[in-house]
Length: 422
Image 1 (cartoon, rainbow, N blue to C red):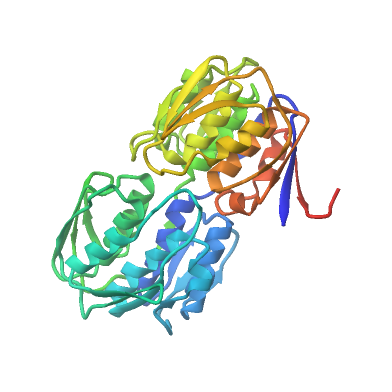
Image 2 (cartoon, rainbow, N blue to C red):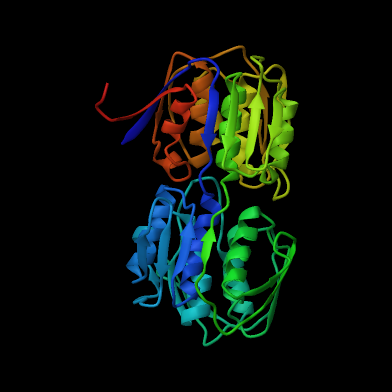
C-alpha cells in the first residue's frame, strides 16, 4: 500500500496546471449510456474514480477507447448488460449515476448500493423517490436497486434536501422522458452546469441548470458530441491553499477563477494577495503567516464542503482562532484526529471545530480517512517541521491527478513510497 513521505521545505513557489474536474467527469461519462453513438470527452483527469467508471462501463459492454492523453471515445451502442455489480460500485458512490441513464435509455437497471468515502450517510432514497415519481418500478433486493420502466414520464420533483448526485441522476433520466420534468431545490454546482451543457449539445432541452429549478423537456433520442470537461475547482483550491499554508506564491493555470468565488474570499481573509486572469489564479502570501479564517460549509454557491479539510489545515498554523462549521456531511472532521498528531489545537463539538493556530506543526505518521482529509494531511505535512508519513493515500488518488508530481514542481519535498521502502 502506497504512502506519502512529506518533509516541510519552506514556501512553495511556481505554476501548476489544474486537471479536469472529477465531479464533472463522472456523471458525463455515465451520460454516454444515453446515446448509441460516440461521446468524445476531452480534459478527463487520470484518477482512480475515473478509472473505476471506465471499468464499470466496459463491464456493461460499452466501448471505451483512449484517443490521446485526457481524451476518450465512449460508445454504448453495444451495451450487453444493465447490471452494475458490487465489486465495482462498492469503491465509489458516484456509480449510482448509471441508474438514471440506464433506466431512461434501456428501460431497466440493476445497480448495487454504492460505497465510497466514509464521511457520512449519502443515501440514494432521493434518487429512487424521483425515479418512482417518473413512473419507474423499483425494488431493493440483495443489495441492488432493481428498476424498470417502459418509458419514464415527466414529473415535478421536489428534493427534500439538496443533492448533487440526485440532481444529476434525475436530470439524465429526464432528458429522454415523455413530457416535462421540473426539478425543484436542485443542486447548483458548476459540475451540474457542465453536465447540462454536455446534454444540451447532445440534443437535450434543459433550462435553469445552475439555479434551484431545472426544467427539462424530454426528447426521443440524443446524439454523440465532443465535450471538454471543466477544470477542477477543488484541486485548484487545494493548490492555492498549499501556497498559503507554506507562506508561498503559487499560480494555478488551466483553471477558471469564476468557479472559486467563496474560496478566493477566504484566502484573501487569510492574508493572501489574490489575482486572477481568464484561466489562472495567483495566491501570494509574501512570506507572511496566514490569518485564521472562519467558514461555514453550504451547498453551492456557499463554501464547498470539499475545501473544508484543507482550510482546517491552514487554520492549524494560522495566527488567531478559526471556527469551522460543517453542515453537509456529519462525519467530515475525521482528519482532525490526525492533525492532532502533528500538534494541532482543535476543539470539536458536534458539527463545529474551533482551531487555535500554533507557530509550527511537527511531522508524524498519520493516516488518511477520506479523499479531502488526505489532501489536508499533505498540506499540513508541507507546513510541518520534519517528516510526515501519510498512509492510505489511495484516497487521494481518487480525486487528485499525480499530486506528488505537481507539488514537487512547486518545490515540495514529497515522495510516494510503498510498504517496505525506506
